[in-house]
Amino acid sequence: MGRFLAKRVIQGMAVVLGVVTVVFLLRYVTPGNPVDFIAPLDASQETRRRIAEDLGLNRPLYRQYVDYVGDLLTGDMGYSYRSRTPVRPRVLAKVPATLELALAATLVAVALSIPLGVISATQRHGPADYGATLFSLVGISTPNFWLGVMLVIVFAVQFDVFPTSTRPVGLLDAVGNLVVVAGPERGWALPLDASGFLADLRSWLAYITLPAITLGTYFTALITRLTRSGMLDQLGEGYVRAARAKGLPETLVRYRHALRNTLIPVITVVGLQMGTLVGGAVITEAVFDWPGLGTLVIDAIGNRDWPLIQGSLVVIGIGFVVVNIVVDALYATLDPQVMD
Image 1: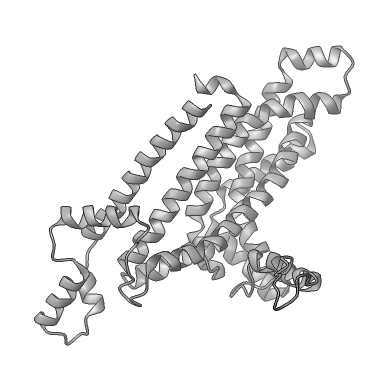
Image 2: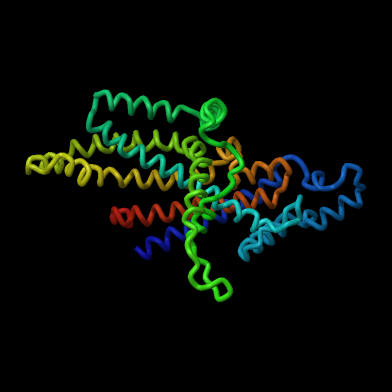
């Protein structure tokens, strides 16, 4: 297992280097000069030259690339062109919100899709099977941005059930109410703020429900189809017929034996899709004004703030690679043959 993980980590580092290279080169293949967005409209050529020199844009491309990679290795993502503040804290501050949204969408998808896929497979050609198949077809065919707008119109505008933007509190803030801050100046045994936790949790759930459904619908439909297909294959295997012939309860045969073997490819797809959700939440975050990496990237693109764009994309790429390594490790644990 150790050798397998080491190999995956090395491959992941190569992928991250490729992401960094592509992200760095994007600035030079896209139209527009960052100096034009920073300098005043009436700035002289001398002022523009000094700005370019201050930003290091007048140096050779290979030198800029080497310095950029070197700075990233030390955790330095540069400074925002607009605000002149360090990029790293701004990007890292947005990561929890994006992870919350990706995890919530994954939770919604897994909680709905696996039972739906099992029911669909065990009641093949029945009403439940047709309903699940129709749901998965609609879910895969529905664009996220359209679904998000429809949910806002129906549940926020028409029925005023869920809020839609400007999330007031994050999950970590809510959980922070349960953390006892002890100290000699405030006493060593402060009571937990359970009421504050519940209030913040209700607020967080209200704000994340519609974005999580929007982001997780395609994912739900995909896993439903995969689970149904896998269950149908497994239920036709000889070991299932043998288990039934031994008189094992049907529930045990379905969920202990058939579903367990079905989950191996499902876990792989869940992990890969989680990485996609982290990077693909841009549109959903924009629709719901979710304060995550997607919103930050869109704002940075509008301002041509390249250090902020590059820092955000690099963090998203690293997150994708980490998720894939974790999935590979989990997959190898469930099926050791993949390590050969």
